[in-house]
Image (tube, rainbow, N blue to C red; front, side):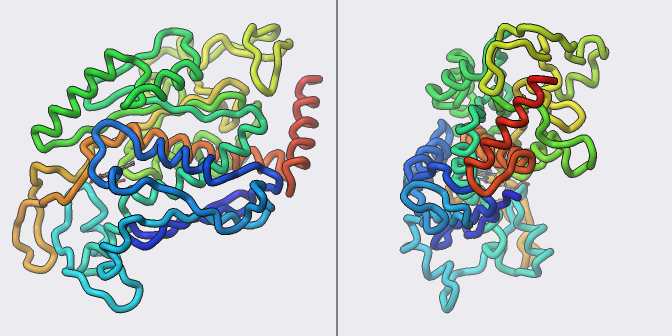
Amino acid sequence: MLRYLTGGESHGRILTAVIDGMPAGIGVSPSHINRELKRRQAGYGRGGRQRIEEDRVDITSGVRFGKTLGSPITLQIPNLDWENWKEKMAAGKGSAAAVTRPRPGHADLAGALKYFSRDIRDILERSSARETAARVAVGAAAKRMLALFGIRVLSWVVGIGGVSYRAGAGERPEELFSRAEGSVLRCPGKTATSKMKKIIDLARNRGDSVGGVFEVAVTGVPPGLGSHAQWDRKLDGRLAMALMGIQAIKAVEVGMGFEASSTPGSGVHDEIFYGYSGKGCSYWPLERRFFRKTNNAGGIEGGMSNGEPILLRAAMKPIPTLYKPLRSADLLTKRPFSASVERSDVCAVPAASVVGEAVVAFEIASSFLEKFGGDSIREVRRNYRGYLKQIKSF
Ligand SMILES: Cc1cc2nc3c(=O)[nH]c(=O)nc-3n(C[C@H](O)[C@H](O)[C@H](O)COP(=O)(O)O)c2cc1C
């Protein structure tokens, strides 16, 4: 079983992630992980913190001479601003003024009440999306494993602050991804990118913030990941949870998603064909196979991957910290006040899409290992090859 946990506060000394269950023999190095961390920090509309620190990982266990050992992998990302926070975030003696003003849209009020804390810093330090750096590091390791089997996890932004981008019919995920990599907003369309930048500028000037929508595609996935047999083994359910677990993500769609609810069945369900599909893929070269001409299901039916690319979409709410103050009530005095801002992103949808890739990569790697798992990558490869042979001769 592949699993992970993260630990660490936003302004704490270090963020840590421990991955357990990764097979031995996968090439993982700090440079692979740092590349992903850098992608998370990019994007038009980010706040001051991304400029203070360039995240860098330390691999402190589970990898030797560039290869995983099969033992727990510990990843650590130090806080480069720790010197300025060590008094306020000390594990032992320290000092800091209590934060008593809960910010709307944050974990502040619910967390203070739940954990019975009169200093909101006890809550906000962990609820902050800074934690997603650890998840991106975990996802980078998962991507390394998936790459050995030709599986890629790709994302791009399709909406910001009400400006939408619609891909042309038949555009492949790889093309959309490569254009997104060249955009400051991870949007494949040039015109849409410049409209989105304007919306962000407008929001910034008004002291406001904006949300948006990103898509994640997984290519090269074989049929049969996940299962119809039990609710918590359904791949779509697991992917939705992974995406909804990202700070500020409020809705997830698989394939056609909400649109399917208002479209007749004949326009939704992807008909099944057998023969030469004309599109080879990593697990199945140009050979006869079952295939679809449409992919409204987003590559998942009955909780299982069906062999088509997996297509997911996630909606992010606007950043809750606004330069234009929102009204709130003080925890101690119970008096009204206007929530003020230290420093914040105006828009973090491009960053969230990189986090989306990471959590999806982990979930796909985890279901892949449930089906083909072994202690070494050699064993996993053998299991995988055997399965492909079996379905090819079906
Ligand atoms: C990559 C990323 C960056 C974020 N940056 C900020 C930020 O700078 N300021 C802010 O108020 N919220 C930011 N958020 C959103 C908050 O962390 C989130 O809305 C808050 O923790 C409450 O959680 P919820 O929205 O899931 O209810 C960010 C979220 C993500 C995914």
